[in-house]
Image 1 (cartoon, one colour):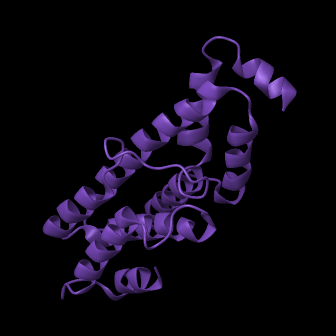
Image 2 (cartoon, one colour):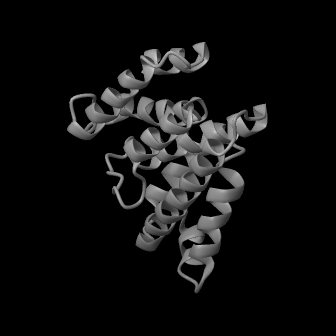
Length: 173
């Protein structure tokens, strides 16, 4: 960890490392995401978390926009989207850090996707993200922000055109 911190203090390496981690490692390595999270939080380099958070929010917005633009996803695309949702939960809710509305407006994304009938592609991301509240000391279902997302999911659950798999994702959360 000491050598890692020394490297991170040198010039532009923090930005490069954050992009590499978020765009190359996180979407394909869900098993080690928790180790990545611990590395970021145990590091004494303050700029590291901020840079990883910023890149993670850009990435999840890109992923949600991509999956909401498609009618059907390939299995690999579904997995990448779910792994990204898990990552967002790990670096925010699990660590008791909020998601700023300017960075990711989950409710707005859900409403837009429900109007376009592509919500089935976005629900797994949101549900996996919300499962992170189980490990959080601060966030739970009673927090107004989380509760409002649950309310939207309950509304979406009533839609007749929603597929069975998506309904199961919602019911589990």
